[in-house]
Length: 305
Image (tube, rainbow, N blue to C red; front, side, top):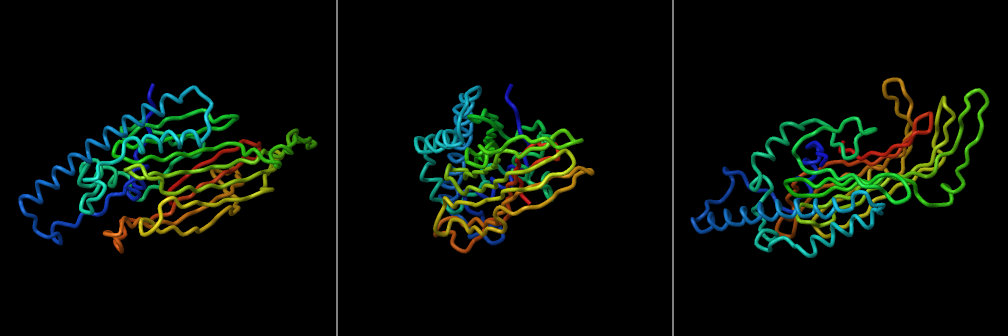
């Protein structure tokens, strides 16, 4: 049964869309009948392309279900699809078309519903998942261990999130120890959460990751290794990225329970194309984190702050 994920993805997908902003009717220049007809045609072409590509890409990714795959293999499926099915030039090169033009009712619904809410890519311990018709969430088996979640939005855009063990010397040296009355004490393998964001037209925008290794004894936990970084994939004037925290450590208390976390945080502003230079579509901060409970359960998440 196809799983549906909720629409908090949409705010960042709108931000990462390669379409520009459409001027308000009060500020826009009057259009000739020919210009209006041309724009209406481009909007229809954009709508058909996004709907077709979202459906086709979901079908390709769904074929990976039940297989053990790597995040690199998943991202290659996404990249190869858009290479083979590029956006029409009439749409990609038009600075006057926005996602709001193509899907006005859906965009308004997403914005009003999600105003002021955190953008959850990988929800905390999988408790916030809801059934909504915002797109398709494809959960895959990560090779060796962990999970890979890919969300394909129904208005264009893809976000992938990977959580699992990092194959390094620290992980190989993780050994269980005894701890007197508690009965459990151990080092976890090194765990990493990675988020990759794509634009509505298939361009990879950025990658952000956080990595941690932890010790726990049933009563408390702490961090023995922390790291994190980001990578830009869009250059020039298309996006401004500012790291706010990379591999930072913190202790979190939720409903009286203690969690040790490593997190990375990235601020971005989307500025699209030379013809859009100086026009900021939106700005936001995205965070990836990896953590552990006092009993050794590890988890990863990505959120929009």
